[in-house]
Structure formats: structure tokens, C-alpha cells
Image (cartoon, rainbow, N blue to C red; front, top):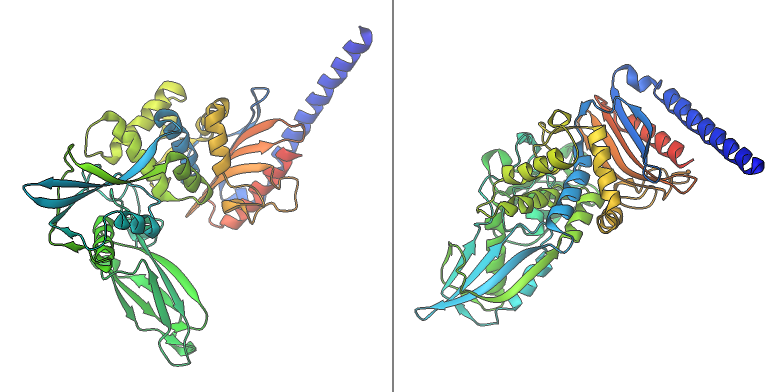
Length: 454
């Protein structure tokens, strides 16, 4: 008995010393010179022992950037369920002797050109369609989230949202140099007459200046202008103004290529009597994975709209989904003064949350193993995948950190799960604020992650 008591006392002192060493090491990291003109909030929690490990300004309201996607994913998986799907439906409705098609979208953020090809193939070659009706009643016509920066367009990370999204509402532009002095070779996918290419660039001509690929976004035009010197292959992604019309234009062009004639097209809600002929079902788990691993903003916002659809009224407004998230936080996790949620992706200038509130969300996700496993499969892995592929390789944190990154101007964040040396799972949140050199913040965050894993 005395020996057992001695062992227990020794272990307690050892754990106490380890905790003190960790706290001292963290305190030392906080003396880094980057905090002379920036700030950070840190919260670390042992999920197995259900105890706080470290906290620094953890109730301070911060901009989470893309780390917010973790919270959005957690709420969506809990409220919608892991079996929820996002559907794009094609149906046939023959009335008064007319052969009519209806297409209805519910904002599938991962709908590809291959998906569209399969949908068009289901119609049958040589068919004459009297009317193609487009059902966009799922959501309202406000295509950006509140607090999104107007000058972030035309980049693909700020798409024009709509119920019908093809290729994320974007065109992939590839530019390759030709012979010196000649215009470079430009290829685009998906191909369509919906946009126009103005290739004013020159191959291997330094005096032409830096190569730029830009859509004429100030005039809401879908003209893509390529200018400057092209001396090596270059690719970029441009979003399309009015993404639902982009979807339909490409669809009708693909139908024409298969000998399917469309005599008329218009916007109209799909009747309940419509016969289903094709349904592309996108699992929510795939959307969550893309939102987390590749930090896909459109995926995160699609989850927000589907949360908003829980109210059962259409069209769904962005604020409906945000209201669901806020209600979830109020009821389950945090006081309202610890957050302000305006979107699902973290693009918004209005979104703020404390590290402690985010930590509570990570704890809640961990306690539901089906949700936790889904999230864990989507999170980037240090030194291995996603936005963490190039970080922490060859260190104690390699493949031991599963976390979401976030970066916008002045903000660099990281939150997720760490495997400690003793096998325990830690939840952690690091919100670097007012940091104008993200590389410095990432280097500091890497040190914290290595410390947790040691």
C-alpha cells in the first residue's frame, strides 16, 4: 500500500512538473518580438482529462478568418446530420403536349463539368425540348455574404453564390507561351460563349511587363483580359458574374452538342408533379472535407444556406443560416458577448469570436465520434495534407496536428486537434491578430504545435 501511494504521489508530482514546464515554455514563446506590434489569443485543452492546459487572452474577441469553417462544419453536421445531401435535380414535365425540362439547384458547391455531362446524357440525344425551366427558388439573389470586401472579386475565393454552381462558379484559365513575340496559347475550362477572352499578352517579351489574368469585374463583365509577358506556363481561376446563368449557358451548349434542341428557357419553380430523371446528390461529408482541407469558402457558405433551409421557407436568405448558428451557440456553448457571426467562411469583416468559444466547439465535436471522425478526415494534417502540407514536416508535430488554418490581411489563425506524447488528444486555438507578415505567425504557431506534441 505504501509503495502504491508513493507511486501515485510521484506521478502527481511528475504531472505537476510537466504542466509547469509546459506553461513556462508557453510563457517564453509569448515573449517573441512579433508581439511588440501584434496580439495573440491561445486556448489549449486536454480532451481526455477534460481540463485546461493553457490560456492566454482566450476571451478576447478575434477575427477567426477561415478557422470559422470548423465551427460552421460542426454546427452543420450536428443540425443537418452526416447523411444530409445537397441535390441538383433534373426533371421532365409534359403538359399540354409540350416536352419541358426543369432543373433545380440547391447550391452544390462541388458540381463539376463531368456532373453536368452526366446530367445532359440522361436526357437522350436528338430530343426536342419545348422549354427548359430553371428553378432558383432555393435561395435569394444576394450573391455575397455580409461584410465581404467588394474588391476581393474577381478571385475564385469570393464566388458569386447561386443555387446552380458549376465549377465553383469559376473558369479555369491556362496560359502557355508560344514562339517569341507571338500571343500565348490560352485554354479555358469549362468552355463556353458565356465569357470572352481578350488575349493581349506576348510570349517571351520582357518589355511587355508582368503577366496578368483579370476579369473586367468593375463593370460586372465576363470579359477575361490577358496582358503582359508570358515566359512560362501560368494558370488562374476567375469567378463568373451571375453564376446561375453561367451554369445554364454551358448546359444548353452541351445539350446542343448532343443534338438536343432547346426552343425556350425561363426561370420557373419546379412543380411537385415533375418526373425526376436525374439527381446529383452531394454528401455533406464531401462538402465539409473540401471546406476544411482546401479552405473552400463556397462549401462553407453552402452549409450556411442549408442550415437556413431548416426554417422551411424559401428562398433561403444568408441571415437564416447565420441565425441557426447563433442559436446553436447561444443554447449550447457561449454567451452572445463572446461571438458575432456574420458568415460561414470567415471572409466577413463582421465576424468575431473568442478562442474559448471556438475551443468549446472543438470539445463538442470531439464528444460526438461520428462528427469528430468526419471533421478529422477533412482537417489538414501537419507536414502531410491540405493547407498544412508544407508546415511542421520533420518535427515532433508532423502528422500529429489536424487543424484548420486561416489567413486574411492582418490575421493568421490555427485551430484543431493535437496528439500529445502521452497519447492524449488536445484541442487548441491560436488567433494571431494584427500580424502583417503571416509567415512570422505561422512560424510561431508551429512552435506551439511542436510543444503540444512533445
